[in-house]
Length: 416
Image (cartoon, rainbow, N blue to C red; front, side, top):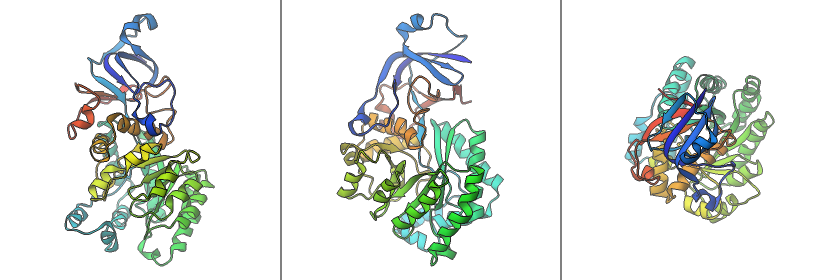
């Protein structure tokens, strides 16, 4: 099927070539005023100014969609989420209000272990149904690609159940989904004094099944004080890499303990969180020889009352920044990428162009899909956000809390 989208007020993120944006490049936002896009079988095949439409496409297709002057931009690519989970954790939300820290809540059986207990009690079908509703909800807010992690099972059966749910979501949803194995999210209670025993369980019992059933694209570890050390992180990641899983790591959320160096030695696709950075850490992240991305999760810092990642310093140092939701029940119970973009501008001083690039093209590269998603480029999927009437691109983060998404197109089809 061929669809012509005409009379676009501003077509945002038009790029002849697709590559990771670093440093000052993040502030560049190519766009076309009074534009059109031609979509064929879900793929962008042409675009340009309306004034040349008749010359470029003399025979118009039967299906023409009038954008009526709205802004059109690439859909969000949420490259870090934990959207498959069982139940909520609002009781811990109240604990945080009462002054308990993330570590204190975890020490009394809350946090990740709380979610693991709930997940192991629920059926695979029920877990899928909950996750499906969340995927449907975030897609209507403009997210057309999302990375989903396991990590709330912490048992062989629980982790495999999560990953099988993610696989079913991949098969059923029009949203592009990447799966990440995060069995090393925390140590289960029975392995608190036997770290090697749990690492052996991951390597010897989880990974072989994950590989045989093709359940994951990436491997992740929560490299943090009280969780997994840099040395343990390297052991687990190398075991996953032997099965073809590329690392995407949680590092420097609470402490700087060497996770960045470890991730770079492993050639991690992205290093995520980065709320706690030293000057040496920023220098490491700006190293061109690494080539990975820094994925920042501002809604997690907001929800946990933590300092926001130093995004401005990272960009000024020439780093590649991606933005994601960290959607999870404990520290970021929202999958709204529009809020992430607004918060990044308001609290981390990103320019609107920087934030939108970080949530589209760089987000796509942070989940290994930059050649298919994240920009208005011929040959990429027609995943498009149509805004409500807005005066400028900056109005999107400026009017935080207002849903400015009018319509969403995924693979060339409008969501109903």
